Image (cartoon, rainbow, N blue to C red):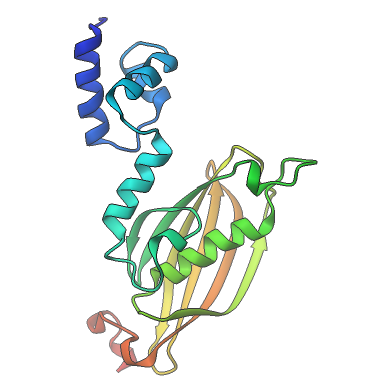
Length: 200
């Protein structure tokens, strides 16, 4: 059932409000119109594109939560974080990330996404990478989206070290994995004592 433009735009606004991560393609399918029509609707309604919406939601949600570095210093966009536990970020590979001759992403961008996510995950004012053990499992190409998932595997508050594992995927295929040995300041090495009673 086709609806008129005014109704569609009202529904479009409420749909994006409920789910800021919905794509133009999904919206076009939902409202049985072309992607171009959705883009024009968004322009008329001053609704930013998906990338900007994700950034806005992330900044709003996480700027008070991330303690170890300013949110805009994270490579990629954080879409979920629970300090000292887990975090997820996304990085869309664009022209500036790739080698011109073959459109393959430079490895240091994948490393930077994973490393900055590991830093952001630490519930401390000071978090530095002491060492990293990393592996690239397949090359990533331009226009692919890399989803990095980080999790804390151990916290040693005696020596101020935290081990963070990061796995990065493109369409559920592993492209990068790393184990980051993170240094944190001793005086604030753990907030959730009941979860790590062995550290007492």
